[in-house]
Image (cartoon, rainbow, N blue to C red; front, side):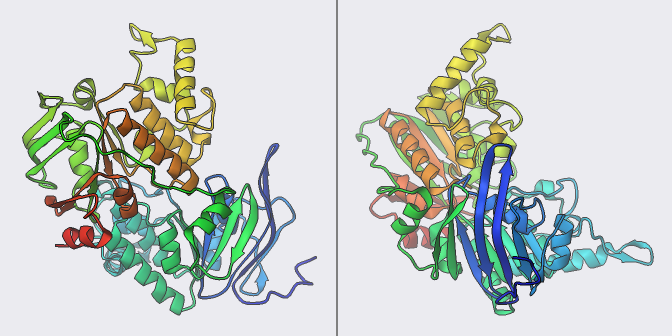
Length: 503
């Protein structure tokens, strides 16, 4: 069928027979999708299902190689570059931030299309227009602020503000709320609804099924590069969508974690911990062996900053950290690691793994003393060490495989693997399933449960409130850097947590 013989049924996007092959591997095969003006269509599937490939074809980052064709606004559409797609009115917001940290927010928003006046860059107008979008998203910072000083959540909002200045009529949102709290997510959804009413279309890629029910009109499900289900409504049972995505039932997303005995020893005690920059203050709590302690709060509450300080990454102004009864005044992360506390950071690609290096190398970087001696690493021991952890955490990969070739879920398992290999007494997991599909998420939850069963003290920090509630024996709620309350499992409901978070 040629493009001249086909009359598109509407002025939105129509894609037929989308396909993509890399060498001998087919990642997308015969996929047909339509997105009408003013609707939000969810694109679901596990990591590696083909969602990103399809999004990249639509956004001009790559091209269908199976004779596929697209139509946009009633005309043949074949973008060769992202610039072509942007000029046509289609923008992609990536899951991983593509910002330039040494530039200001305004410069990032207008990078590649700087506004000019009288032959010079019109910085004042760029700041003004960027500030308007930040205000619409509820981000209360100056557009002259350098991106490097922003939190991960704030950087994600800058990405969204950048797209909103394009006046695009279709936006592809790839995990846009992964770094956002409840309040920021609500603001984003309000903006999406307003833009939909103006005729803007959305492709929404997310692993958060509750979000999809809130914001999307229809659902398309990919599995192993094929379109396996199309649903005319987003109001569907969770189990049905999970079965569509993974090809099987995931009966129990959150595993059973036995409550530790009341006399279980305290593994970590924190007293009146205060940050140098004031992002958290007078933070006090205990966590026992075998316990999962959750931390909740809206973005900017100080959760990540507090965990980084406890892990020795950032300095503290005052307070006390006691690990297994021993007072620790960390000068660096290595001080804390040697005392038996490790941390899985919130940004795995920037802080957790070296993407261009192998799984075995990534694991060895945190365990050089266990796979070598005298500054030398023994390759055979390194690889066998990695293979055992790959087996234990069911990583879909081999020791010599690069971390960058893994799905998000398997990358996260590698980060967890390299730290639990040290047999710590306390592990902090900051956003443990950010950007991870539902199948891999269930596996990571089982890993967390097993660590607790083995007697490890586990701290879970997450923007996903269901995750915190589903895993934790207790939940501590932070707001503006202070503890607003502590809830035991039975009393920890979404309503109670949010009441404290916005108090």
